[in-house]
Length: 445
Image (cartoon, rainbow, N blue to C red; front, side):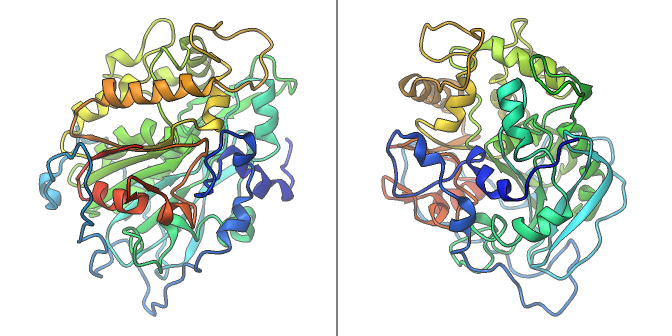
């Protein structure tokens, strides 16, 4: 199996994207900034606690106050009483061994012997206990593998992730800025515990398809598309560790944004007495007019989404491969009282590139032969994004969104954009804080 070069790890963050708050031009170069450089500007996320932290901290919550913002659509505020914020039907009991205790503010890597990366190597998760008893489950992003071009890029960057990579690179860069920052008083998540779910399966954390060959991929070896299966193994230990968490945020960027949405239903079911909030950063599930069903069908078959999408989401399973966008409606109906949110640029170049394999412009040929990473037309993508917000999410109080001009990709991990990005005077970090309080709102230019 191929190992990725260490030097490519930081450079390949282009597949996750970057978010330069001062650059909104429709230029491919906007996605090529080096996140590792930006991340070093953030404060080191360390906590000088002398006690050993378990899963249930007792410090005061950091999100008890909500910044007042004005938007066109605001949902009724939900109760902060976790006993009233029930989710759906409870999952079968997760009864694995709790995760080991560690001092608060300290990142630790936990190996999972049965979890696998796409190349068959072992996988695991990062854990950082906080001073609050609330929990963030964060899904990493980084492209996808579904044809020769995308799999080649994926193997050059994200196909393997272990403790060495986590300790040497991720802890000091990605896991210090944005929502991970423990020292910035504006961050409503600064005291929360974090689970970091790496992305090394190439299936947007949604696959349950081991030993699968990718049509057209020059590497004639079976791939392990088992991101969803891995998450089941992780939950076996996460749930017993944080069983009393009153609030769980399920979030992620890019492929991890899609992964957060795909895994939200079972995570919400696993914490039936908790508030379970969703924030999908840069993983918009566009409708079939924009995300071509023929492309969605490739993903369904390759990753075995038939076994990982919620079985009772009837409209999610269109015969032509479409219908995945109905997951958003399904989650809002099943998990009433919870807050679900989407963050996206209006012309996200990275997502347009991946969606371009299916359709590049309105009325264009779908899934043409021999296509090589030609982005979807920006106008077409923007139209699809607002169609999703206005006609699918509509006035459902469960859903909120934060949409921005430009082509940038991913924001919440960024040490600058998360705190400084503004739309109509509303900072992203303030929208997040209000969303966590249950005050869903649609913010756009």
